[in-house]
Amino acid sequence: MTLVALALILWLAAWALNVRLANGPGSHTPAVRLAVPAIFGLTLLVMWELLVRGLEVPLVILPAPSQVAVKFAEELPTLWLDFKQTFLKGALSGYLIGCGAAFATAILVDRFDFLRRGLLPVGNFVAALPIVGTAPILVMWFGFDWQSKAAVVVVMVYFPMLVNAVAGLQETTAMQRDLMRTYGAGYWASLTKLRLPAALPFIFNGLKISTTLALIGAIVAEFFGSPTMGMGFRISTSVGQLALDMVWAEIVVAALAGSAFYGAVALVERRLTFWHPSQRKQQH
Image 1: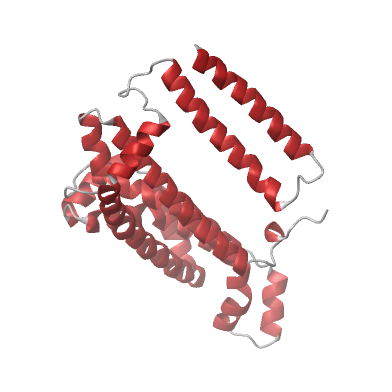
Image 2 (image 1 turned 90 degrees about the vertical axis):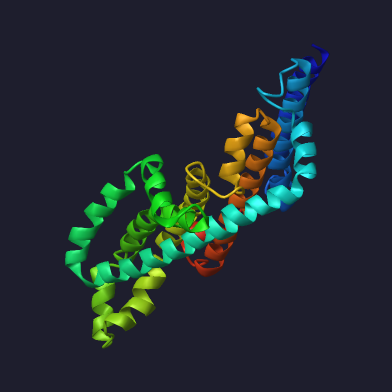
């Protein structure tokens, strides 16, 4: 029980340190903003390690972080192959195709009102379909390689992106559109110079939501058929072999890839929508 007691002491010490940093005079400096979540995350990892070893939790129930790290280092080539198959081929290609198609459809929906009335209700219906029901069908249609995973991702990201883009294109007021018409601006000039810039926060909202959906869709699709590689395939087979350390190593890769993907889109959003109130820095 020594390790368990040490974990509780560590938690209390880290809590006190974080409270002191968050409420201190330098709480708004970049170093403290980075230090608080870093201390919190490291504390959770160390507590995990101490509790698992202190309580002697079996590997098949919950491996310690050090065991996951060792497995991660040992299986790095396999993890890289799975990353390429699932993220670069399945998730990223489906993300680009689905979001690109949704954006083009949003322009058509904005241009032709009958599409708004006919397509959006169908989109809400399709978006509500369970992925575990549609994924096996798409795998049978497009085969067992990455193309079927990309198809699943397209289905998952298309309608969230479409709904956000359509909502963004309606963001401008009637007075702003009338003002553009008084300047002699046609539809396309009004679209590119007024409505698309106003729609950017909504479009990026759809893009950010789709980053996580894309990775989830690609991994889930691999449970229903895959060549002998991919995160979903590896998780499925490793669970059957009770190799939970390998399952957690794949989860770490998925978490890192998803976080980096989301962060990259959020960074582009900050660069392009710096004028929006949500991106302005608080003045202290």
